[in-house]
Amino acid sequence: MTFETRGRSADVNDLMAFITLRVLHGADRGRVFERVSTPVTIGREEGNSIQLNDERISRYHLKLQSDNDKIVATDLESTNGTKVNGEDIQVRIVRDGDMISLGRSLLLVGSHSDIDRRIAARQPEGENGRSAQLRERIRRIASHHSDVIQDLESVRSPLLPTEPPPLPDRLGPAQVAQLSELLEYVQNVLRSATENAVMKGHAERVELEFPDWQAILDLQARLARLLRDIGQPNAD
Image (cartoon, rainbow, N blue to C red; front, top):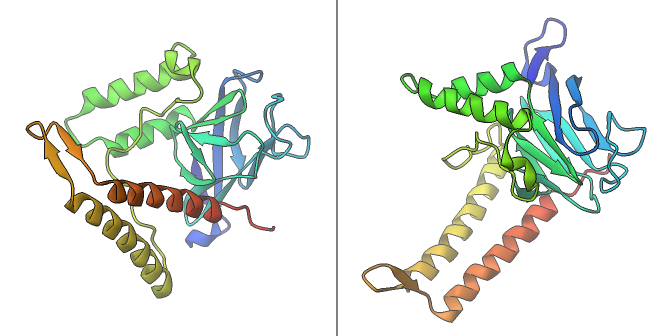
């Protein structure tokens, strides 16, 4: 994806984003939607920026929009849901090389040059071999020569980060405080549960008390509900 300034201003809010999407699987396999300006809607209805011939896709299924030099994907309360890199999403930042699965269709984000730039940015000097492997993996996927195409439910990008995602920037003081409270809550639940863990069989097995296990399950349910609430499409 690329960002270009509108007129003379270089302010981030004046950037126009363009995104390239390649259809790897589905009835529209082989189609390329090159440098589509955001916001982009994807669905089977004519009014979408990108119309796909897929009966399992909702009339208006997914929206891609630019915000603070990032591309945000939002599922528009579709019937069958949306996956990014094999994970169900309500709202998610997408990057070049990511895989979007909706209905029976699989989309690859980014042009060849966009993905090459992401690979180059990820690999420190001296890891050209790894960069070449990633490029070859993406090339095989885009050419339909990969078994990753066979299972849309688990398809993942070869460029998935190995570290946690960065914290959001440009947050106001109150937003920073709210995010801190949320992360502290998660940390406290996990710390309380793991403090009572018992190691078994020379650390090959860990046992948790039933209340601690339930606390972790409850945390998972709360986070799932929170993700859903955050991902509800805006009224506009």
